[in-house]
Length: 143
Image (cartoon, one colour):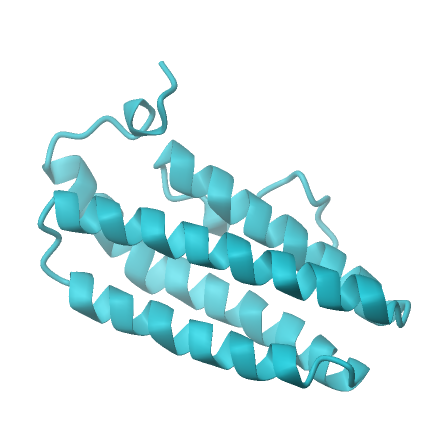
């Protein structure tokens, strides 16, 4: 279990694009809350967190995909397919979430998926983002 505080983004989740890093931080915090709820057998909280995770995931994917299309990222369709795959798997887990072992399995799956996705896919996009001359901080509306 990852014991980092929910407001601390693991270094491997930071990709250097402020808005996406903020979203990764929210997803990580939700995973920590999910693990806590599962560990304490809080069924209602587990379902509520899974619902929130599904919403945050859809938002994150939409933002990433929009940025990729705006910047003509060549691997956008591969990235979108990866997002669709996770969305389908997340929905299957949500339907089975009353079983705490399944919810715990889901938390572990999403953690592993997020680690792999950030390392393999998001970092590739960051390189393209920077080559396009976009300031990662400016992209989030910060200065």
